[in-house]
Length: 181
Image 1 (cartoon, rainbow, N blue to C red):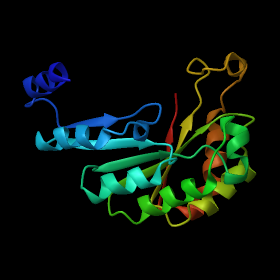
Image 2 (image 1 turned 90 degrees about the vertical axis):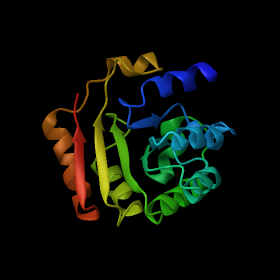
Image 3 (image 1 turned 180 degrees about the vertical axis):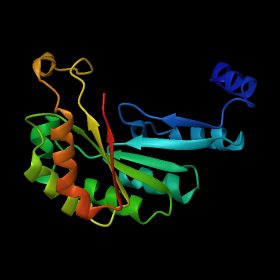
């Protein structure tokens, strides 16, 4: 840890902020202590989360340790377990969404558009779930960045397909962004 802090201190005139990402950073019990060290150095902190740990998220926000949040939304809640292939507590996801939207912290909700896992109907359901949020970002799926080799054969949505997904949710958000590969 000392090495990392020395590294940060040696770049104090170059760094403005740090993005804490993962896996899921909120799994780490000492994350608050680490974020405090960053904030003591005047650094902005962006937190990437999947929304599974609302209590930890709320505590970090309450301590002013987070300047912006990006929450990955995997699917409509009814399909979360199917899409993530793991047990998911939908109430925790909903609670995290509420915490983020009412936090006063800059935020974005985002979804990686994986063909076969998301379609226009699913997008509309997600739009309803996040209704009133400011920004929703649709990210292009990249087959090379996957843990499951079966996904390597999937063809990402073309530009028109990405835009069609965006049209399904534009009424629910102030802004819909696209991140295309």
